[in-house]
Image 1 (spheres, helix red, strand yellow):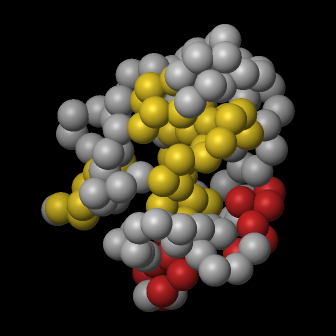
Image 2 (cartoon, rainbow, N blue to C red):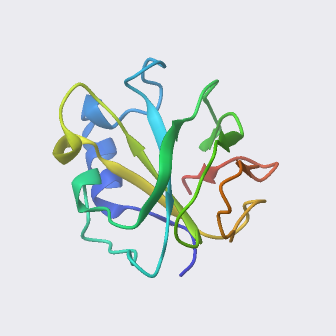
Image 3 (tube, rainbow, N blue to C red):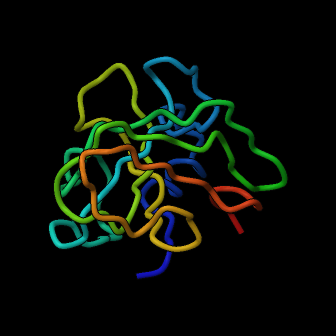
Length: 139
């Protein structure tokens, strides 16, 4: 699977639905990244919310210092601490809000162009370094 934007997120962005904005306040409600074991989760264009995501490994991390420039979304590199569990081959970005996991929209599925993937957790830290040109681009 190549990197992909979830179509149902893109649809809501085009409608201007505020729950899907990428510039949300950091510190609880924001854009997060989940490490994913693709043996337990396969990208599905019909998935819309975090509650549909399986195979999450470790604790999700918030992307800070987000920027949106000429259609490119970028933010801080991530460090997941003391990760153990299944093999990690992908990252899923989603937007956390004040509701439950059934309201957190899935944004992007990323499995290529990221330093640190794939990786087999060994109880240590996993560092994810985004591509120099940004995390993803809306084209």
